[in-house]
Amino acid sequence: MDPATSGDPPLSKNKLKKLRRDEAWEAGREARRIIRREKNKERRERKRATRDLAATQQSDSLNGHTNGDNTVEFEEAGGRRHPQHIRVPITIVIDCGFDELMLDTERKSLASQITRCYSDNHKAPYQVHLAISSFGGHLKERFDTVLAGHHRSWKGVKFLEQDSVDAANQAEAWMRGSAGGELAGALESNDTAEGQSNPGETIYLTSDSPNTLSSLSPYSTYIIGGLVDRNRHKGICYKKAMDRGIKTAKLPIGDYMQMTSRFVLSTNQVNEIMLRWIECGKWGEAFMKVMPKRKGGVLKPECEEQQHVRSEEFLNSETEASALEGAAEVISGQSDVEVDNDDVEQGTSESGDCQPRKKRRMDSLQPDDVPGKIDQGT
Image 1 (cartoon, rainbow, N blue to C red):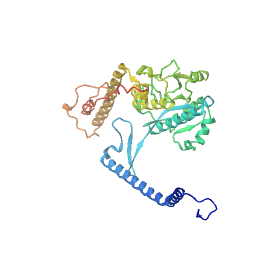
Image 2: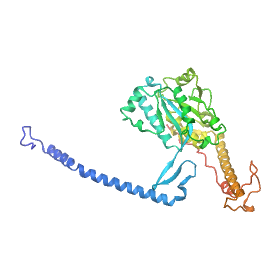
Image 3: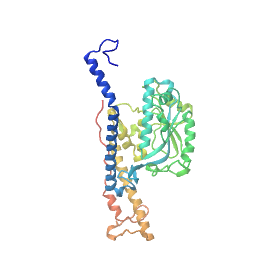
Image 4: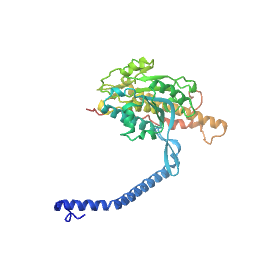
């Protein structure tokens, strides 16, 4: 309707300009939508072309082999690369039974930490069974409303109304079932790994525990307290575990790290440290990759030496396994590898088998440098 013919007061020139500008903007909405769609299509095509080029250049590494740091495997399917994740028989339970003890801002932080836990596990090369126990109250309301219920589409995570003890009991069936996973990563060489005969255990992780966790055991459940309280309720997770008769332990931060602040970590940081340990088998490396820089943490000098020794032991164990496989193939007449006496080290491994030339190639590899001192945070 023309403002000049209406009963309303006439609009100023600026108002008329703004009105016409808004009308022109609305009229061009469909055209802009078409342009955006075309740009998105072109962007997807460029990304697809880049992926195809990378797949062509690295075709030798896209046939189910691991990359250099043994973290991610890839396979080629339909012209795209897909990360291959391995499920391991370990369960991490986030105990959310402290809903009434937190403020709204703290529940918001916990919801973000739970989301991060899912994301880290979803992207990890070795995935654990993840469960959220005592899921209800204000926290569940936030996930259903503010977060639009996206958690219902998450894969590899279970939201349970039961408490952490019931979740741990259910986890026993998850890990022993057909989809329970396999012993891989650090669990494969873990001294406690005894296959299905390993009884496993349930441990509540809390910094107040007098016990220190030395390694993760297969078919075990580790409970992390889902509580953001700014230290208002000190020792509540430890007390809850004691009341329920659950073993407790703390991460060996003090054994490996020198910190300029307290050793308190968030829920998602504890979760990520455990995922990193499963990947590399070294607590020091796991802490350095996850610990925030603002905490000013550095590896203790003796731990740096241990990191180098363990890296060398890992390379030697990989070399010995490769040598044994090669020797077995030669003996059976199924190997096409030629072994020259000059290329074989005149010595024996612990099993007494000679180690062919592959040994020399592996010995030339140097263990990764241990991360040094990180920047001091504020």
